[in-house]
Image 1 (cartoon, rainbow, N blue to C red):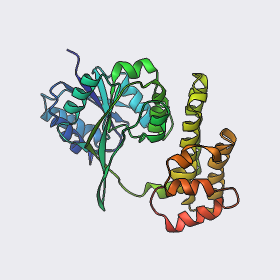
Image 2: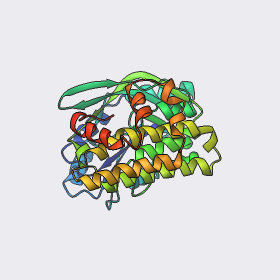
Image 3: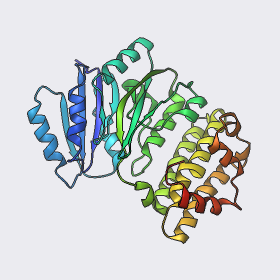
Image 4: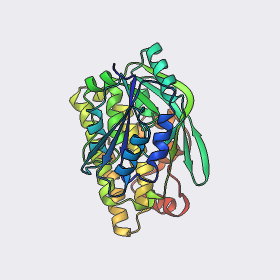
Length: 325
C-alpha cells in the first residue's frame, strides 16, 4: 500500500545529529510514514549510525541509500526519484519535529485538497528559540513575495511536484530558493496550519564564510528562476514579485553576507556582482510596488541605497549589523 507521506532526510557528515532527527520521525503519530535517508558521501560515521538505527528499529519504514557526494541539491533529487508516498516532506539531519506534524498536515491536505501545506516553525540556536510564523498568503505573485524559502516546514503532494517538473539545481547552493520559487507558479491551492512543528537548529556562523564563489552561485540560482518564468511565458505576470525577491536577495541577505567577506577587494567585487545582476535584470527596480506597500525598515533602506552609497552600507553592515537582513 502506498505510504501516506515520504520524508526525505539528506545526510552529510551528520553522525552527531541524525539520530535526533530520526527519533523525531520514529515518534510520528502518522502510521504509514516512509523515511528516505540518503548518505551523501559522508566522511564520518553517518552511514554506520543510520544502519545501527535501522537495526534497532525494525518496525520503522526506513530506507537507507548511499551515494557519492554531489551536494545537497543532487541528494534531494536522488531522494525525490525514490519517494512513494502520496505526500512528501523534508527534514534536515540536524533538525527535529513534533510527533503530530505529518499526521495533522496530511489530514489538512486531504480535507483542503491543497498541493502545499505550510506550518510555522522555530529557529533554535545557542541564544534560545524564536517562533517564526509563515503566512497566510495567496497563491501566485503574493506567494513568491511572502513565502519563506524553507523546505522542511511544508509538505507537498507528490504527484503535483512530479507533474510540475521542478527539480533542485544540481551543483548549486541556495537550492531551496530555486526549488520553491520555481514551484510557486504551479501552486493553485495552499493550506496554512498556524502551528509550529519543526525546530530548525542554526549552527555556527556560516555568514562570515561567504565567498565570491558562493555569491556567483546565488546569482546562478536567480538566473535559473528568472529564465524559468521567461520560458513558461509567465514573466510578465510575476515581474514585480521576481523583481522584489531580487532586491531582497542582492540588497538584503546576500548583500550582508558579501559585506562580511574579509578580503577588501573580493568584498567589493562580490557586492558588485549582485548589484549588477539586479540592475541589469530589473533596471527600474526602484519603482517596485512592494517596496512601499510592504513597508518596514528594510524596504526604506532598499529605497535609498544606490551606487554612490553602496559601499558605505557595506561598511555599516559589516561593523554594526551581525544578523541577517
